[in-house]
Length: 96
Image 1 (cartoon, helix red, strand yellow):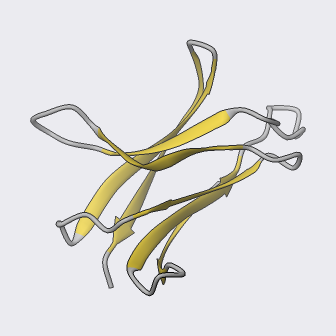
Image 2 (image 1 turned 180 degrees about the horizontal axis):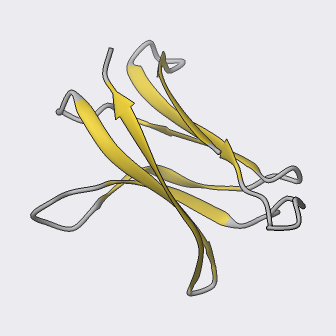
């Protein structure tokens, strides 16, 4: 599950938030693993958005990032365990 939202950070600047919950196939939470949001780019390397987060004891994460110059962003979230990619999930974010 991944949600995106446009918000204002504590300094009053606009920011965007990606939040979600990562679970194993049996429904148990993925705990303590790094999660990174990326902007998908067509002609160059994908761009990391914000700082990586770690899943909490319930498998939840929150990533805040500054708005990009484009009105909308095709993004995806990756969860890694070492070099293995556990999850790649696509989402879409639009500036409002």
